[in-house]
Length: 260
Image 1 (tube, one colour):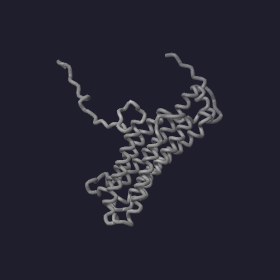
Image 2 (cartoon, one colour):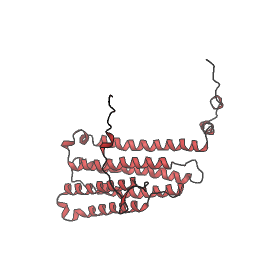
Image 3 (cartoon, helix red, strand yellow):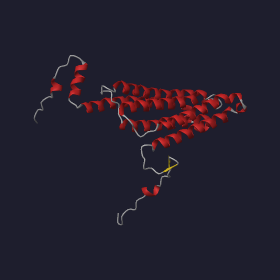
Image 4 (cartoon, helix red, strand yellow):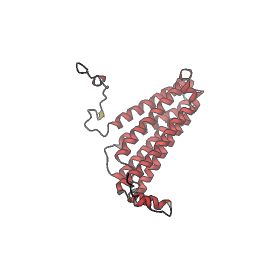
């Protein structure tokens, strides 16, 4: 077999790591280098998401391993938090694939760097929410006020992220009105809960917690459904909202041809 000659990059001697990286990037177009850089940053945020999900399993191991022996409030809290995190992960990946980080583009690199910071802060809030719900493991009536205020904080960060993306990439199909509306609704829910201990609802905090967590889960489901279909103007709508459609399993059943 013949011996393949080394590429100029492989045969070169570099004084430092920066020179080697620069040589590697020189072999790609500016757009390819930007895509590679964005991919590394995306994997970093993916790692943060994985830490949050793993943190929940470790801290709530007694709930995960014995769910039928745990109180319903802590299970509802975990469902609400995990649904929020997972749907955020899906929506973020969809958005970042459409408009990646442009760290290598001179005129928007600072904006995109701040967008990366916002992503890290959003995942940090998810971790904070996991910690806030931990007292529910032993007491379904423990205060969830800090957890509830995490939701409007998330929507504030979602809005900041969207504004930064629009500043870097220009107009898009997403409407900020929905972010503001649901952020306001979550703030209203958190404020009502903060006043509940001084009213009649103080009598059964476990039930109150279940009601408020159910409201948060319902609001998140509605927001994610609307947000999921914002980029599809052809989707049938009712009063401006996308019409729901129950998935049909009939399309998945195919009749095998005769003789096979």
